[in-house]
Image (cartoon, rainbow, N blue to C red; front, side, top):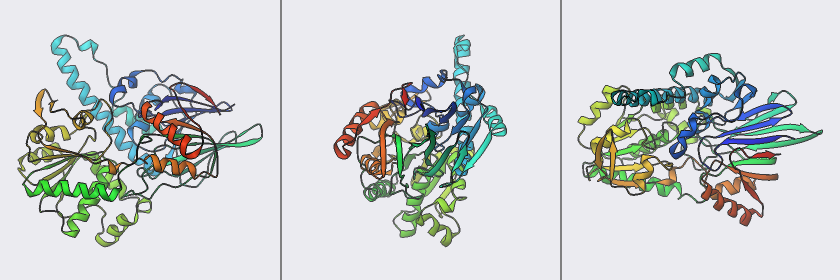
Length: 465
């Protein structure tokens, strides 16, 4: 029988990694990095032999779905990687950035340990930039297109469909034969909110014998997006009108592009007070440029701006801060600056420098527009901590803090259940990619609303299909 074993994103949100075995063909769906409280798991062995994996299927390019791929190659994987072209494009810049961040953190920790005489205790990063470049040079790639089957040995077929999460994101249907019977298993990847500002909305599947579905927001429903946009605008305008500054920790992919779209709308409508807007993230700048290469995957608003202005995201107040020197110059702007920078969970990146310089000032605002994983600095701030430490210096959290959850790139409980309900035929439901307590709530909602049973997948649990 075909079977699935989850080596990540089982009982936790991050580290997505699911090994599907069909007739001795080994297919790994995602190879993600663990983040937040469970990031130590990145240093552990995979739990399976990477040399035996034949194919890796990437649902999308977020690090919690691709972040351990270079580690997989280093430990012997030599098979084929299958993903959409946009996912490959984004994966390259995100993995190079991940490697750079890990190397910089290692060098800092190593220098401090060297002075203490404890350098031998410092672990090296799980990979570096050279490993990433070597991986992409050697990688055997197959580019998948939406709605076009990808044929594998033993009559296995993959079908990629738009998950509406980020550019190139997919849910994948894997069709195979077992005892002359055609069977299908669907891996949702991450499903997007239907009201996405930038990309086209999620598509709907048809049939599956088994469904492995994410449950990040299985416990709740988002506020309507228009309400979140109104709250965002009010936070921005009220801060600028008292000559304050707005800090927006933002993920480089999707969220930064959404924020640029809203700010561009505000500029065009006259709602945005005169200010300077800085996209202070080389990674977000690269991602934004990649987005412009795929207008066919973007929504109507983006294509409207492309036809009208010749570009999608730019407007007169906007400046791209590419170099460290350009980033440092932002510190000289005393008022009316909107600074969009990574990382989105405040666990690294240029946003920390801006928080260090501005978070203590009550005239300023810190606007969270993305999910904050347990154990991250962002999560501690939204939970109410009033004192944080950045680069060894204690900083008072005196700025106004806004948490605007309606911008989530993930489907909420209603949307997840409606997506499940859209199947014309569905067998077993398995919950992955979510915190345990939220999965319990989602499981009960499925039972109540769909009169169907769902199973919460445990790490390394063997599930026979």
